[in-house]
Image (cartoon, rainbow, N blue to C red; front, side, top):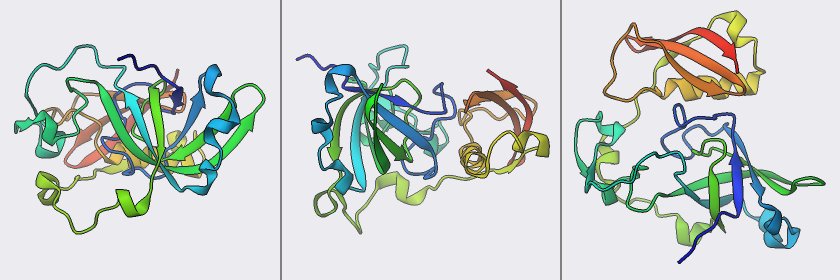
Length: 225
């Protein structure tokens, strides 16, 4: 079996660090799906504009090694508890395939890129290969009142984000709100807890550097990439 990409995802986040750990938890995060040349015929997405959400199947292209261990340590459980890989959404899997549900913001057809699907809430980094797109259908895909394992008893703890005014002024209100939501999710590995360590994540052409102490994330420096 041969699987080849059909499109590439474009995001303001250009590395794995800082990407939301699930789709939909940063609803304002914008991204674009740009098809490869052989799939730029608009007929491939005819009537897709009638749907609000789509499923993306994609490849964990930035993982540097193949997963061979049967268990992983979900960040939601603090990174210390082992859980079977097939009971998690860990990116380290026997086959590096991701699945995300994202909202269609709008669709454009551009002279140089063909059809472009503009989406919200994706958990993909810039350059991620997309291998398939399917419409989200509520009657078949939405299940209410169901158990969600350890996710039901653990919720993401969000940080308070402090950003100097001169840094905040680098982005418009929408971008600044998205960046704040991303930082509030605590991009650090969950086994890191050094209040003096400076971390950095990319966003919108900048390297955003920060520290975390006592539940507060403080942006200390920003550098244009």
